Image 1 (cartoon, protein in one colour):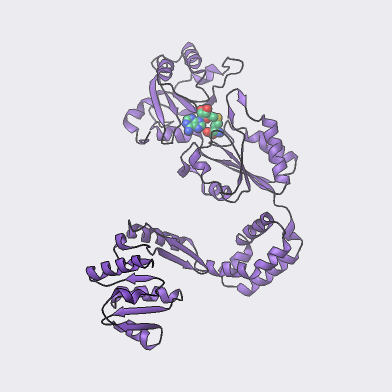
Image 2 (cartoon, helix red, strand yellow; image 1 turned 120 degrees about the vertical axis):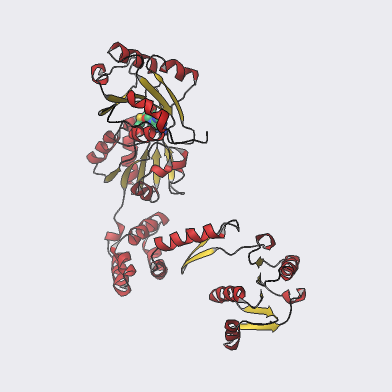
Length: 447
Ligand code: SAH
């Protein structure tokens, strides 16, 4: 039931007719478009002012008059009768709001700000409109037609899901999207009958999850994260990044804290092989970049040996992301022409590093896993020739809302970091470039 006969009412009526509703209109007068609809028998009409009993028997009410008192009366009367009511442009009088819609029937996407900002909702809608080809509806209709056959062909929901995911990314989908539907139907039909359809698609995606901020993921990382069946992940992967893994993927934690290995590396390698051989798409998700202090090389070596297909997706490594968010450029024409990444991990309590290589002039040194050995590292750098006044910084949980930065020099850094009670993960940066932070710090974590 629509109360009102003007332009807004017309739009609402058209929307309701599109959804196959039986529309009854109440208004003292009718705009000419509505009059046409009435003449064509598309709506029924009562020429009257609003009164509450008109709502009896209605399933849904929309008030679209320009009279506030009438709109309020409609809202009150509808609520009293437990009929869902929408009053145009008055969210406080509504029991439901109608979202912006992207229509790819049978796929329908609704965007709502709950009345808070229709403009923002419409802008989001425009983005989604641009993102999703108009022909996606046809793709979905095709899937609907073949659903039963696919269900008969594949007994488990997992095998069906994999089948459809492959189809939607295949040349068959391209055929539909380019308007060659008969060819697509033939190809799909043949594929269902062929034995190729059943080959196992076990694969490992070795994905770099970046240093923490989920915006730093690559497009490929995100796509693979959303199509994996199981996710094997580390301690370092941030909560926000984990949120983007497919909701119903199985999660297996193999995180390592220093000196307390949850799963030894060779068991992780074997786990990946086993899961892939079960036909699963395995997301091996790591912090930062898998090939930088990430043991990614060892993991794919085992995959290779076992003939398991894999792909590697680079991520933003801590040195990269964390230095950016701390406002410390790793190179700079005045201060550093080279940059070296090293690990400060202690083996048997001693740090064995190539000290002469680390104290070269005009070089920035980035130390991963260097928190425990920090005092010793600073001592050694000074002993091998760096001045005690050399600027240095430690950054905890860089790129995240919990980022903390301590700047000092080699002589004072370890004490300052201890006083600040910094906890892993922490990255250490040593070099003249650290002083640039004073001018260039830009990222303000909420804490
Ligand atoms: N593959 C990862 C590094 C793994 S080693 C990468 O490419 O970044 C783990 C070390 O990375 C930590 O001890 C710490 O030194 C560093 N690290 C990773 N993420 C970090 C972050 N958000 N902030 C500070 N340091 C980080």
